[in-house]
Image (spheres, rainbow, N blue to C red):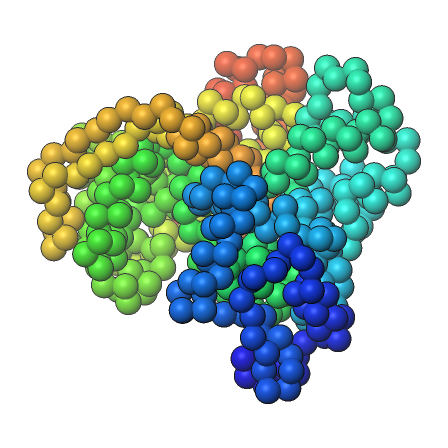
Length: 454
């Protein structure tokens, strides 16, 4: 460990490291000291020393009956930790290793519902509940607790959260104070807490966070089409080191479909979710036999696709379709905020979670293949993927409930506002079929407005 990193250690973290290595439950776990006498807290997981540590963690898993598989080190690290609080290397703050800190979406809900601002990782959910009195029903609404008569006061609410969320490390509402990192770190956790991780980890900087969740786009854009098949075909490209370009970007409102064109990474990056004239021609030809655009964006596509005569026009269409997709998500978020998530679920496609595909005769030079072999799946992983699909899709709408997001590129048409109010009123009256027709009318109106802007 270099001296530059040594000097960055907070004195509280240094005390923490000395305390941890002296605990009997870590006896036999390898560590060394620097010439200054400071503990070498980190080793490379694939190094000889890292393998020694890994064997130690494996033995501990066996000792405590933790099955050695993905996620096992995170479990045993929690079991072994003596205080269940980890000290941050950067700021010296101690945070719980449990999932007790509200994530960004929950913090937003708390701010809106209770008018109470909380700095991330400053208070556990238990402390927050104690600071907002006489709001038991509001809390039950947030956590979707229905028909549970046992939860009548704050203590029973906290007990319920502990059993159903904290002890299960549920990520739907909460985050831990520190992320697992075994066997690299001695105690099995990152040196920095989540309080400072966005500062210390360059990969977590806001400008780079998208790289950590690109697969979330499969779920975030409420797109039609077989996303599992499209994902599997994209994997075929990756195996050959080829960048797969969507002919019709999902972020513009197009469908998931097993149709990509091979590009170099630099070529694909340069396109940046924009279409060229050739893309538009391919899409128009493809839709003679297959759906190419999601239902909510078909209105603007049909309104403008035949106006495209060159690359400049194609880029202009890309910009208008991206703005339209922004409007779609705003409208969905308003429907969600009105308490009508059930109505929105008809526009999701979770059924593809329960299938898998193999592409026979794939040619990385063209992106073509001879045939597709499919099979149905019914395992736990598929159910988890199904649940994740719903969760992430609605988490995206949570972002759009923020009034600041709604102010960006919002439509300038009072007729749309009136139609949206009418739609929500229809939903409140359980007139879902009429509401769906009203929603189509809104998207049609948005496409006509875009045509006028052309």
